[in-house]
Each structure stands twice: as C-alpha cells, then as structure tokens.
Amino acid sequence: MMNEDVIAEIDRLKSDRGAVILAHNYTTGDIQDIADYVGDSLELSRKAAECGAAVIVFCGVRFMAETAKILSPDSIVLHPAPEAGCPMADMADPDAVAAYRAAHPDALLVAYVNTTAATKREVDLCCTSGNVDRIVAAIPADRRIMFLPDGNLGRNVAAKSGRRMEFWPGCCPIHDRISVTDLMRARRAHPGAPVLVHPECRPEVVTLADQALSTGGMLEFVRKSPGREFIIGTESGILYRMRKENPGKRFFPLDPEPVCTDMKKITLTRVRDALRDLSPRIELDEETIRRAAEPIRKMLAVR
Image 1 (tube, helix red, strand yellow):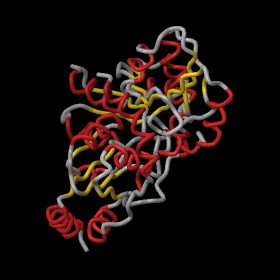
Image 2 (cartoon, one colour):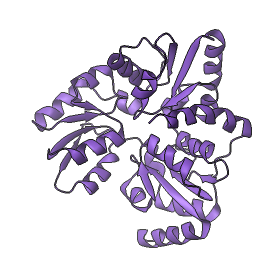
Image 3 (tube, one colour):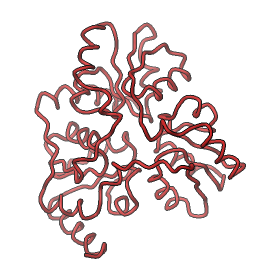
Image 4 (cartoon, one colour):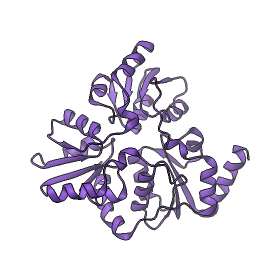
C-alpha cells in the first residue's frame, strides 16, 4: 500500500479506537507527521498523564511507552515496535540498583527517565534532560546523590551546579560517540553557526558547545534565535522538525551523523497494525505501576 493509504487507515482506526499518537522528536518525519503530539521525554510524559485517551500509541523506545502506561494505567498503551529498546536504560539493571540502595540507605537515587519501569520502582526521583538542573537544585545540599544511569548527563549537571554526586556507569551510545573532533570539524565547515549539543554528550564536548539542551530546549532555542544556521549535536531525527518549524533556517548534523536505529523501528505500517490489532501492548503489574509512578510524579511536579 502507498503511504497515503496507510495514513488514511491510521486516521480511521485512530478515530474508531479513541486513540492518541505520541511521537518522540527522534522518530522519522512520517511518524512525526501523523502524531497528535511530538516532543521530548518530559513533554510526552506530561501528555501521557493528561490526555485521558482510551488508547495511546507511543512512537519511541520501550521505556517511554512504559512511562506512558505508568502515568495512564487505565489506557491501553501500544508500542508498535516492541524490540525498540534503549541501550542506556538497560545499563541500570533493577537488581543492581536495588542492591546499591540496600548497601547505601543514606543515598538519594535520582534516575534519568531513560530507565526501565522495573528500575524506576527502585529509585526516589526521576528527571529528564529538560528538568534535571531544577530537580538537582531542589535536593538539600547535604544529601548524598547517586545519579543513574547516564554518567555523562550526571557529570554535566554536577559541573554546572557544583554538587557532589556519584554516577552510575552508563551512557547513551549515540551521544557518547560524539567527539571533540566531530564538533570542531563541524565548526570549520560552518563558521559562525552555534553548536547545540545534548547534555548526554561527554563533558568535554559540552564544554566546547555553545549550548547543551534537551531536544525540547533545542527546538525552543532555534525558534527564538535570530540566527540562520545551526550545528545540531544530537540524534538526527530532530532535524525534520527543526526544518519544518523554521523555514529559511539551515541545520547541519555532525559528521558522522548521530542515528538511533531503535527510534527508526517505528514505521507507518507498524502504527497501523498496532491500532488494528490493539497490540503489542505495554503490560505492567500493579505494584510496578504504583512504585514507579511516585518518582515520575515528583519529576512532573517540578516546573
């Protein structure tokens, strides 16, 4: 079938099911175009909590769909590509996190939202790259903090805030591969264009960039900036939305271009099939939902 036919089917099924489609900024352009809401992890978490839809189709990686189910437990949450996971999330094994908590009862466990539901149930607070600075700033200065699983994000927050923190041995492989050499090559190719990177990048990359921002922060920055050219140091899916929302401005990815293959596993046909079959579903037990909801709701309370 042509894409137009698949999209027409999606529209019909969405109406029949009372469904809402949420898509992350890193998904492909055709997925972003059929979504009701496109955003970063924080924005999509809020939408999942507020939308009240009978069916939520989550176009992103698994931990994001799990978060939607935790925040909207009465909804059917569909994840069209169940094998689309997050390597970083898998680096914080829930049993290892529980063992750390047992061994360090004085520590406050702050988990990046890029963690599995099973890991979230073992922590005190969640955060996203868009609100982590505010989350950490609100923690009493004398509290011991273990930040997990992204050591790069944690170190960047600690450098900015001056807080002493401990860091789990994890990272986003896509952002961790971005090097100072990549950044400097882009600057030479596009002199005068500001470099925007994600705070999941290594600290030495963040130090040399002009801005370190969440995807939502990047979109806001380029929308408000009078500049016409920008170097973008994050997963390349965001370029579609940037170009769509900012005609006349030019956006340049790093070389090599950062690509998350898991985000690209969501396709139009898989969204159509998920709506048609009401499957694959995210299923979580009540205890996991109850315990994981607490640190997420604390995160959402920080404005």
